Length: 346
Image (cartoon, rainbow, N blue to C red; front, top):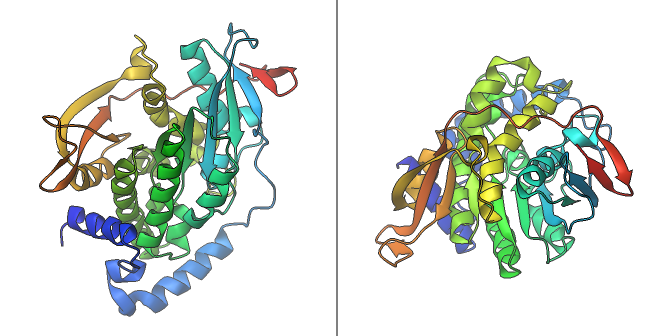
């Protein structure tokens, strides 16, 4: 079965309520089960459990330098797991939510209010509760989820179903949704072979299936896997002290990947090359676009019409946008400080 066919099969199982292809079945079946379990237990001993909460960014307002904090803010929500929450850094300004908010504020010339309901250790099945805790009036939501589904061997179709439902619920409220798909777990240093190879393959398969579900639900995705993969594999600087979660620098690269799609979702146009550097590709079936996105850095996938039609013979039409290499969104400077309750400037 092709990669596109496998991703489409997982997404179809999610849509129709089936269990889908089991995680181990995708990569070789029961013969590897004992070895995988042993390596998983060893990896969990090497990766320290989360001992603290990530920096608090829920219900905060961020304003870039020169932006009046008195202007009506753009409302943005962060949902998902520890990566969305910013676990691994020590300052609120270094979380992906704050970094995105500051960058958006600089372009929009308005402050950005951040609602963060992301939970450390969350799997996709926690998304309904997270969505319920988000004000339906938020203009944009960013979701990053999937890593814990892979490490806990959740069936891909089950994970994808929860994500698709979450996107659909938020779109029904008029919220634009940007999903950072499952990151490449093959870069995690505490994972030994063959678990590292298996984790990479599973995370990429889940990312492709997530893309199909999100686009069909009306959202757009950004591939975090191969964007962060080579960078993280080559540099320990990208990781926090636990060698599992990103550092402030790592989160800056993630925010840089998400920023153009976030701006586009909000309808913001800019002449800044760093904020709008996309090369637009022709439309193709979403399953094919999903597999291609997983393999290319920072690729956005969004639904598109072809000759007035949203679907073709092979399903939903989608458009790939690939970013040119850019410098990452700079982290907020050390002198970032609160100017009033729940408002920060950078």
